[in-house]
Image 1 (tube, helix red, strand yellow):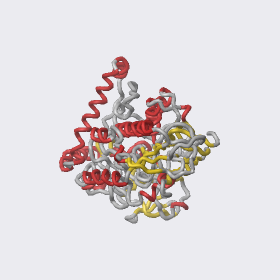
Image 2 (cartoon, rainbow, N blue to C red):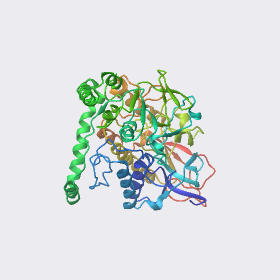
Image 3 (cartoon, helix red, strand yellow):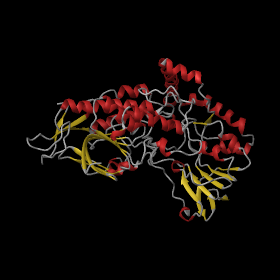
Image 4 (tube, one colour):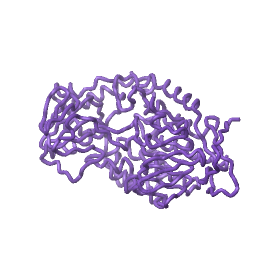
Length: 518
């Protein structure tokens, strides 16, 4: 990285969101951008999560970009290695490598109101940008609970998203903490090899069978020869999930039939009534993410597995102690305890127009206009922002909708011309969030009787989108300039600004705010 490089756009992160933003910028004719990545390769979540059994719970042909179809998915539900390889392929096909800046973790980014640009300090150097697109994602920073005695545990400790492949678990006594999407894949993968597996379960998940199979060579050949067949397959997968949305958002009682199917799935593998009672949720299915596995319940029924229906509360040497005071001796502890979703660490590193960090602005809960723009943070957008998550379909659909919005945002700045910035109006952000949370009231995520990672510390659902992906695409098709304040710094002859909307030089004048709907 140059000593002080200036670019039109700085993209943070190189997972699906960041790479998608990079592709879209190039397709818009913008090549003056960089992608800042804290690691040494692309992939985001699918690079970091390499634990045994890691795979996607969304069908392969729906979990890929519409503009980069992959006719050669090997399975109906792809494994981590295949998704990571796909993202490497996208990086090469769309010539993104010249834009990548690896080992460049963002330490702080600060809005310069005099020059209408972002000053960014990274572990690889400093740069500035007219526009920042934050695509760090909500599943990027692991959360490990504070457990008394954890620091003194003599064995191995790691999070599922930071798997230690050098540590051999064979013949070891292992504690698995958590029963989320990662844990139900890890448990059946390590159970045959460990001496004993103790699973700490605070809340049992609803688990449906994973109908996974190899995609035949004939199918792949057909998709290569006739691309519309892959598009039709994707469209069918999408349509089925769109039809399911109303049950989650408007009529949660309709999910009772799905609960009966899930209970039947459990009963087939779990014959012990006491264990079945431990594993049966007491909340409406869908309130927490419905998990897919055909191997989880059979693994729990094996004689070397203990299910503790209580959270881990204390560690004394090699002894792990549950909240119900039961104990077990273990050699290793694996945390499948999720991520910092509603308190993303990147928010502490973004300093806006009034000197507050994004974390401070979001102290009462995350809020962003159309899931993208936060008031007081001009020319800053986020991909997979507040209330853009899904409980039943592919996040790639939501990412592509946000890329449409990002592209129009950049396009509008180009039309406005000169050094300019757009800052979401507080009233517009508030109005958008009122509508979202009004719709949220009757969804299964709010009424289903569970506590999930969708909710923030105050119990507010700032994660999930309470509608269809079609509705979200309509809402983000283009930027409504009446929802933004236009910030200007009059250009002065002889200043050293670079071209584009929002130059790199300073005029010494404060930014002027102009109502764009005037």
